[in-house]
Image (cartoon, rainbow, N blue to C red; front, top):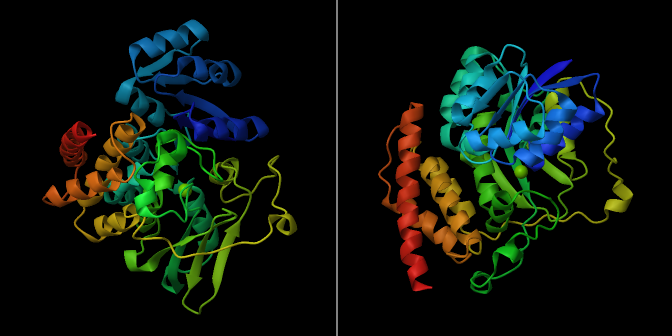
Length: 387
Ligand code: MG
């Protein structure tokens, strides 16, 4: 029996994780549940799983949760609530599925407490990959990737020596605007960007998929998770999203992981690892999958991917700037204050204005994050006045 705390329990990963737990009541016990403000959405999970601790982002949200479900004695609020939830003695594994950067402190605290981490939030590694991986190594704690591409690579690498790895190849669906010219993308709306062809996800990551920034963040994530340099990471566009990623070895052999596009599979893998369990998710039928295509990414049409490689190759603070400026630009695009192609412009201009600094502590990470968000917000303000 694995005892799990879920940070971000009402998002798409969180609800998929609850469904994995419900499919395996004899193997998974949900002991902690945290959400931001969606108290009404969390209440049914609290009633069904009877966790020993809950946490919400605000006192008001916690009060609404208390009105909708009987709560356990251990209740938390805000960042401190996430830390409390992630470090409790009855937790074996923390699934970090909250969006944005709020969970970073909780993940570091969970590692210090010796908890295994199932990581679905890529910002944690993009902002503080060095800090997180150093501490995980020191504590002997496993970081299990839930992101489908990294989960695929984790599976392909199993049993292989690092020195035999030539390249990691991340697959990208290409998003809803694959094949479009940059000029034709200037006028696309949030509704257009939120129509992802193969995956059902939250709005931030869906826009990131449309700009290819999601793949860029995944390149940085892969660097930290698997200890490879940027020259050992490649991206290939694969519109069918059936091959979830590949590893090329020094002898030219490639291993790929294939499956249906259902996040319950990588979540369950993280819960069961190194074991494998039966799943109620329909298995892949190769004969029905049809033709699988692979194309090079359109670097010039989707500049965010190149920006991510640039950030990874530079000093450690630049990925934090990339991530923070992207968060601001995507939120502004979704609010109708910024055009689609201006997302990459705002990120590039914020990166250009940044003087790289070493980042060895959490406060240093937060300081760079705050600077980049303020700078990007100012750029968005100037840009929205022009619109
Ligand atoms: Mg992914």
